[in-house]
Length: 169
Image 1 (cartoon, one colour):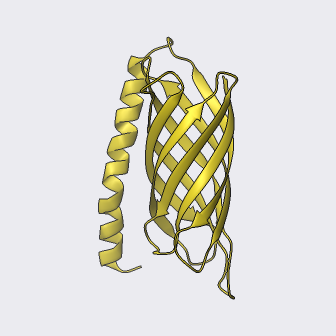
Image 2 (cartoon, rainbow, N blue to C red):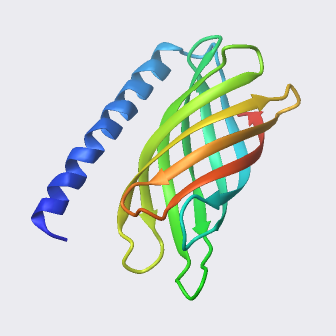
Image 3 (cartoon, rainbow, N blue to C red):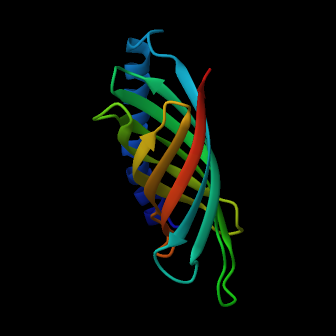
């Protein structure tokens, strides 16, 4: 990787570092009033550009309440862009941090950013960001629609439906 690309990658990761620090400070301020939660999810999506039309992934999401309607979230998992027309499939392990906001009791929106580590030879690391809209059922089930983009490549963007089950730790 050229020195210019390394510099650009370092600059693009600075907002992520700031976000992680803010999340940890906010979590320490919330003490034990809001318990940690763990969500286990699966997402199926459509790539927004050829040559990878179908995307499938799974994730683990840790969530820490910061107040009645805001949580810090930390997500990791695996995302697979399936191949089309002889193009190789692509895999990423995203590691993201962000916030989840509940404007009503069950409806939420969230935003996450982080790094996507390529599992396919030569992919390297990409900045990844993902906004979502969802609904958390009182039973622990959660459904959301998300947009996710691994910015290093023009063809690693998706719109996906995520179904998850969450519980207190």
